[in-house]
Image (cartoon, rainbow, N blue to C red):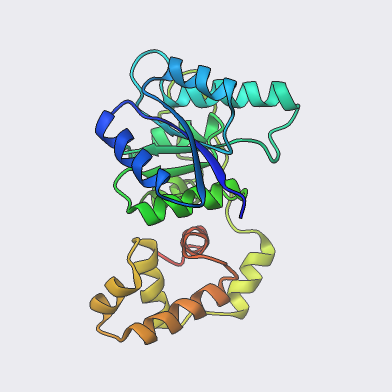
Length: 243
């Protein structure tokens, strides 16, 4: 198995040490290096570009996570002429506001993950980001996709930062959902998936067995034509299945 090379730029020492230790214990990951601020980070990333750069949004100084992402993506494009199949950026932060999320993606971030996730989810985010997916933490999916239900909403994105377009479902996706309507119970399960609940938590919330939950989750993924829970959550919000 080819390892995924990862660099970490995070100013909080304990957070950085904890993530580094967890990644070093993971056989899927080749932890390259770390930095505690944006200036150190850009030097590190340009010297040895990783498969996935984990960047804290709230880095101190003039080069914050957004500026670092912009500089790194510009460097990658200049070196390779394209951003396809090139190093990815996974933003890691505690910020859940729309301004931060849109600014991060507009700067070129590939994925967005909250710091309070379990390590298993962070690892999933790294793997899927490396594979080319845009991994969005389910806890902030509602914020990102609010633009779909409010297309004329103007976000207070900082001056000089371009906005990012978010589109609703394609016609074929609408046809898929019309041909495969969810049952009431499947909608309840989907709502809990969007809220980031595990199968065990869904069991407790709906008072059903784990086997029944797994069956409902499998049916939801099949009907939404999704490979994973995050994709199902995003598609559900885009389709207006969850209020």
